[in-house]
Image 1 (cartoon, rainbow, N blue to C red):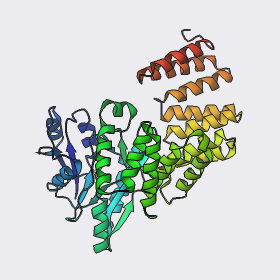
Image 2: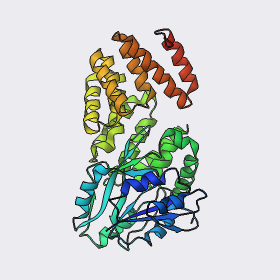
Image 3: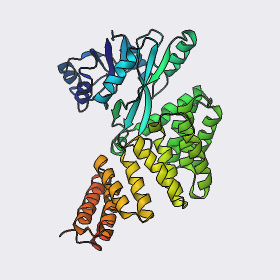
Image 4: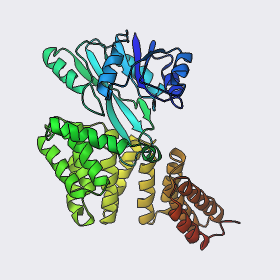
Length: 397
């Protein structure tokens, strides 16, 4: 028997899609509400969920631990309201759950709209065991308790689902901008580093946030500190530290960034988890004149994850630089198909169409790029592109 466990608050806009994604897979739906003022509770109950209500305990880990008290299944799947379980993952997950020595199954999560790292690995499906508990601030996890349990009961093992299992919308830039996630993350990771100085996970999260917000010197120091304290076996944490250290390098440190990306790609991780390093290295090599290796890296990315538009987009840029217009058009069109909301894809497709003599196609692509930029609040860029495109084609024709 499989139980779904969720903690929610004011998730009326999303909870129905989340619950529907597990209907037929989970045998029990348990939703713990921490103080919704909308109709989250009514919507969850209407879809057959058992709903319990508690006051917000101050952090996610204690809330998730309280939620575990109400599940009765042999296995527990934990989701947030902005996540969906992909039906393609049902069969491989059931096969893994049927194996008697599997304790926990790592799930590949597609971070839709994420600027970096389109996939992450999350420990969200595990046997109901009294020793498995959530810990850590903000991004709560069961990993610490599972590691301790494996020391005491070494007959268990951790498995990885080969198929991407979850879709997650929470890291879309427009959604991040609406809330105070960055501030909450900063406070939680600062507190975590007070408790665990040099903790690789906290250093990776806070260091990358500092770099993103312009505090490059402190960000790099945190990332380097995390790398010093990171065990060689902690491959996901080491990858994230190396990736963000590479991203933090300025234009004058291109060689250092290249070396860091290559170190990240040497780690034994699922290929989808290393897409960001692969694609960023390809872009860096293209700027350094190594177009052939850049193309090989991008082709590998599209083979591993054909559903990720950025891989096809990068491949289009590389082929265009090489003078392969037909190949560039093919790659841009595939990028448009899998990620139609990416304005830069439409813009570069328009230029390639124009070079190929497709005036009507270029006009339509320019228009779409301008529309998408406006929808994202990038109005100055939209106006600038309108001026540039109007000098090439009649946009109003």
